[in-house]
Image (cartoon, rainbow, N blue to C red; front, side, top):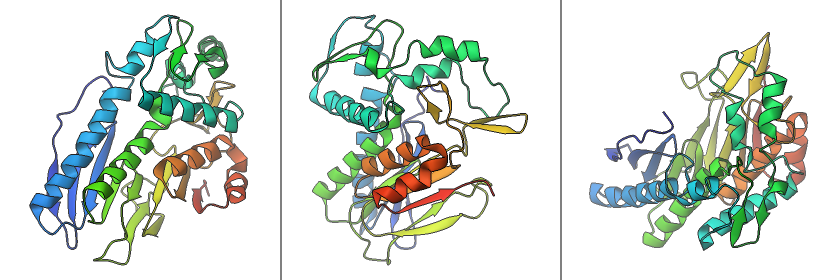
Length: 304
């Protein structure tokens, strides 16, 4: 459950040509693959990754009481001063809001009050969506660059950028700590620190539309940079033959129409890749055209 915190443990296993550290953070299984020469070094690197992921989760998760997000969301119209790291995330989200013509909006998380994407068929009534939509809209927020003021009933949610930010932070720390090639993979959003030495490239499988048990739709060889994926493989509703993916247009309160089932984007950083994959999903039928115009490498999966 979102409000429950799994026990924070790290496991280490030796693979054929690298070590694999695993832990759970930000609602996702996380792993660190590293070409460490011994178990001790692998444990140190995995601990760095896990500690940073948990720090970011504790600070920015909307499920944590008393953190900066909770203080902003419970301020009931009062101004809240934020630290530099939080300000950078808010500023980035503001830029995405502008670039997407308002379709990327960190105040849209309250729409979960209307939508529950659990694979069922409970599509909310239009009146329910409209009522919740009154509490959505970055234009209603007063953001000064150092403080934020929101009307009572509104919330912010960094779920759209937090995991990618954590991946980049971890990759940077690992580069600073050692010259060992690593790949940090947090629930499918990932970045590498260096090209691997013991293999030609890091290999990443793109999940098939048939689910995790099926063969990967494609295997990507990655030497540098990052990948991020947006999609509705796990979170959707289906009613009367219509599939409702969990990517919601906050200007309407309804899932984006005609969006790909999955978009994976390659970029220099995970934040950049995540930004492009999310903005592309919000384009719906125009996702591929949008990504082609960005000159980035991408992979889209649609229903046959």
